[in-house]
Length: 70
Ligand SMILES: [Zn+2]
Image 1: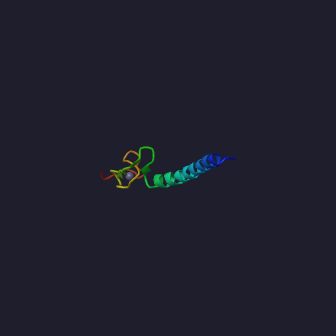
Image 2 (image 1 turned 60 degrees about the vertical axis):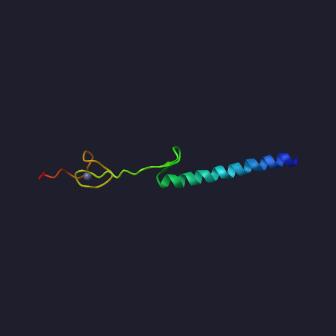
Image 3 (image 1 turned 180 degrees about the horizontal axis):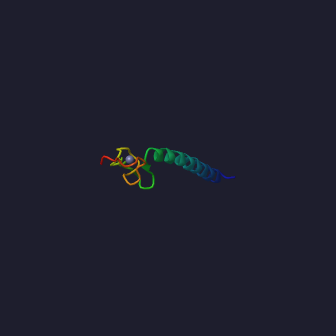
């Protein structure tokens, strides 16, 4: 193997290692609500339910039964 072939092989190894690292970093970024594809931080919109005030659902999907006094 020539020195140039060896260098080429090392370059490919380095790229493989960096790609594996990137996958790990991307998953960490995704867990922090970072859009890896768009390259921007996702804005979180905490939509509170109009009926009970809890986040994650709307009035339509509220698990709480409607208040009879309303
Ligand atoms: Zn609710």
